[in-house]
Image 1: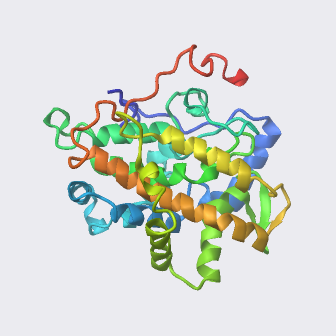
Image 2: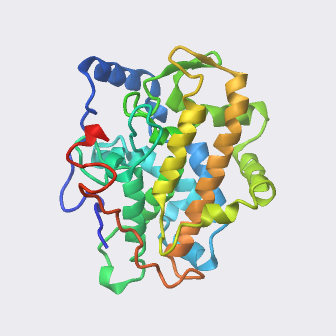
Length: 339
């Protein structure tokens, strides 16, 4: 079992993420835009989205998994995983945690509308496995050492649980697997109704916020509404959402592939720079946001059920291992630009 990063990424710290390889002008525009417009929502689903995903997962945990989760949660969470699912966003901008920033997303080639782990899962310095899919592999592997005396004290399993739960939300947000050139929609300036924003923030936060306002509901009511969809409209699909293939405990690559496909079909479509996005965009995209929140919650629960003892025992031997990447993979790692 290969584990890539623990806390400070192996035995030492990783420098703060460097700028992506972009032309200087584009890079400067992106940096200015981030600090002026999108910093509050750059990382992932807003607090509401992560809360919904984790609250749905809590309701689907096996007894053994629920007990393990509660034992690992920090005391201030009061046994509620959903209450702390936004913690990775809250710390990612602090110097001590800046190494974690690239783990919230994966960049895919512009307009390809596809994803490949060996091609895409690296940070701006080309460190492999440093993306949201790689993080899910890593932290699921760490959690699989729970109560294993051979690993006692080697990993901070509380942090592993919080990161894993959060990243399940991230990877289901379509623009967290968006195009490199526009930083997953962060560089696409639009108006959400009358409010200036960017496309990434629209999907992170503003569609959900608008839904709460338009339908006069709070987050708990939205959770109940999505639960109704899961139990009724989507009931026939839930088993396939939970499935992860033979001898696999985690399968983030499938979720990333879904996300970039959805990004091309719905997030980027009719959302060019300067566009005003209103009711037409909102009402046609909200169903996809709700479904991704549901899928993230269902799949997080299924993964935790497989990791911790219970109906999925014994633990699959492939838990947490990274895909093998070489020059014979789908893409040549020495020539990523050709992929």
